[in-house]
Image (tube, rainbow, N blue to C red; front, side):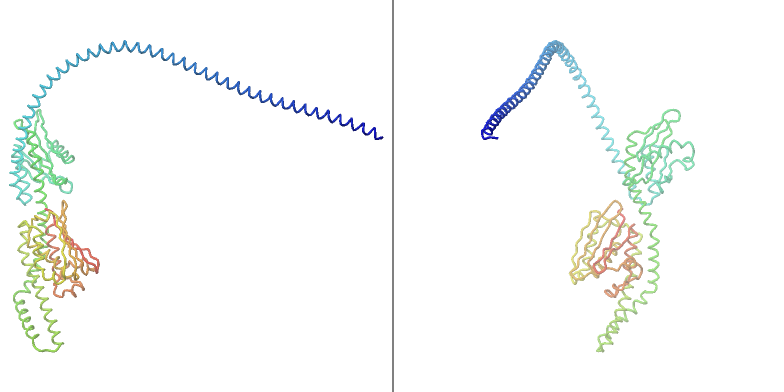
Length: 518
């Protein structure tokens, strides 16, 4: 190909390239225009949606406005109705005021009547109070007379006869609670056969009802077989001791409410006396143990009488004289041991003779009223030397129940002497003794705690036996007879109580005395 032809062909190619470039520019412009149209279309769609939503909102607002308008119209209509009703209500209110005025006038009249009635009731109540006060005084006077009776049968007879007399009853019976079974004990114008008879069936039902409910009962039966009944429980601190029953099978005798009232008061007080008498009877049955102690004393007294005591005293005097002579150490030690044995025999004799003194006090278990604190102070006064030698401190705290104890101070002094002297003798130097007294419904409890040598567990119960002494007590006190705790425990039992002990060996002991709170 010639140069000319080549050049010509190049020119043609340049023209084609130029046309293609122009075509590409055209396409790009078309694409740009299409993009703009598309964006415009999308914007128009958004505007259309917004327009539709705006129309919907406007439509909703118009709907709400219509509803509000309708509601407003209804409210106006209701207001009109209310206006009519208010007129009616005003008329009714006027009528109501007129009726209220009438009622006020009626209330005034009724209040005047009520005030007069209340005044009459007040006068009646005052009269009833005077009557009840008179009944209480009369009942308490009668109670004072029977309160001193300790024999249970005599006491029960007095209680039943008193109620029969004060109520005007024709007959009566007093039941006692024996192991949750009501047993007839005392009778007045009635026999056991009468109670077992079928005609007494209704009365037994009344009695059983009183036992179950623990509430008094007043029955007035009218008609052909009319009779009147008063039945009251004998309660002591919620314990049912028995039931008292009286009746009258006559139209001439009628029990009043005041008869029931006086019987209830009397029975509530009489129950205390019955409880005390029962406890006294229980204590009397325990005298067998005391008699055994007295018999043992008599046996020893017969052996350790003046015939033995005088020779022992002579031996002791002679030994003392010999001990003053110039002897060697073995002889002196032998004499010292012999004197200790003689002194121990004399201590034992003293304890046994003391039992003889106690024998005289057995029949006077309740001979006086005394304060335990005063009795303790007397014991401590007699122990002054031992307290000073060991520098023992005492702390005493007694409740009010110990201020007036009804018993025998001689007997209870023996108990306190034994326990307090032991708390001092077996205590350590600079030790402490705490005496605490507390009470409950049934018992007084006295605790005597020391900081002494203590007692081994295996000996805790043995120490209360006759003539028993532990190895430690024999070493610490060679003069003891082994009778003190035995006597003290028996005395506590005469008063419906006991003595026990708690101890930690090497740290101290607590002796616990319980006495019936009568």
